[in-house]
Length: 328
Image 1 (cartoon, one colour):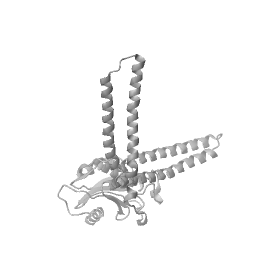
Image 2: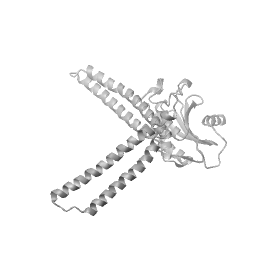
Image 3: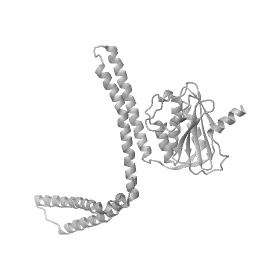
Image 4: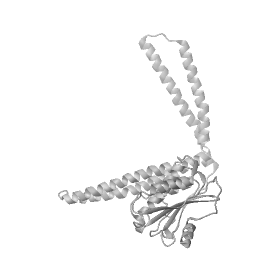
């Protein structure tokens, strides 16, 4: 739907009314305060100090005047087309998230309610089974709420940009993922460069990719991580050797609550990769999914931000594997 200037900026009609309401509230506050002080003086039979009255009146008028000037300016900015578009975009984003959450919460609630209605209260085994199911669903909802809070924080642009040492970050992630059981972890490549970004958020996104790979690949299979830099930015990847992700599904895996099908549909809130995608987009980048040679999926964070180091020859995560296998 096309927007006109008049539709995007309804300020001329509403701004005076809004400012008038604001000034009325401020003036009413001073009036109530003055009446309260006057009543206290009458009750206590104290003498009215006219210099104090004048000072109070001057302060009240000055406050109202400053409020009028500042309020008019702020209301003008708030009703500007750019701000209005940002507010509308933020509102739409939160509304879509709320719709998704409402849909997701219906499932565990329906499951628990249905089992409670059919439960045989006189059968201890049935009661125990329903209790375990209820606790499991409540735990899942707790994780879901935690991931929703995290996604909301990421989408609210709560980022602190600074210098990020890719080599240090790679070693840090390598040390953290090494304690995830069931897999052999290794650092395939570590880039030497300093990029601009939010170190904690990039660490968070990278660990989420690693956790995703650990969940959906066969136990004892190897998983590699690595970083590379190229003229336009950096790559942070996780490569597994599991069933892979079909090309037809790759555009869906970063959607909210889209857990895919097959083995990649187990567990989780369905928000993990959506959080990764939101962090990448906040850095002006994106996420990609490619095939791992001989089977598996390679998920890569592409961060197209400036680097401050001599850059090596452009490299792709998949090329590293091919070169390693060719040399082996």
